[in-house]
Image (cartoon, rainbow, N blue to C red; front, side, top):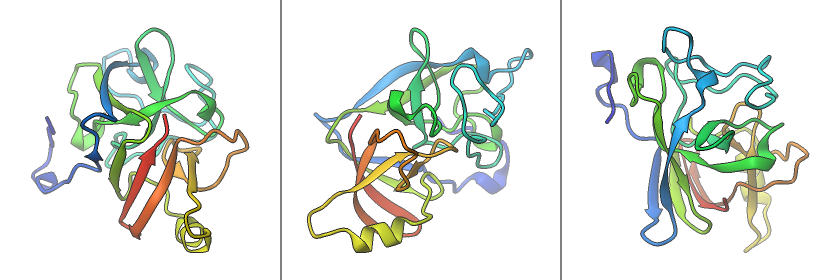
Length: 187
């Protein structure tokens, strides 16, 4: 449940929406990695200097102080998950289903998150859940029928720029606008 802390956030939309998921996608019940909580239990955003639970290639993308749904997640230990980066994209596990931390926090003091998994499930992502830099050019220049490959970027969002790992997280089905894309999940 979305728990906005300010009245100005009452019209915030979900940034990830399953379109074809009845048999293809599964909302996996996971636990937020303990490294993403401070000693007082508050949310701690992943930063470039982090080496645990995953090496980071940059700060995680935040909206209003928290992680956004649609961020690429990696499995750490047991049932724990953390935000991916371009360095850790080889372990992509799925897409975050919740707002975590900040003004739009879904969790409160809980550590349980949902991670959407399932090859061939189709999702709609709303900005800023994806990095649109270069996406329009990649989409318009793709040969008819050829997929635009999406990877985990340094900030944990989907991007069309290969970080060098070659691990595909999703295929772009359609770039409707700079504010909305439709993807075919591959993890």
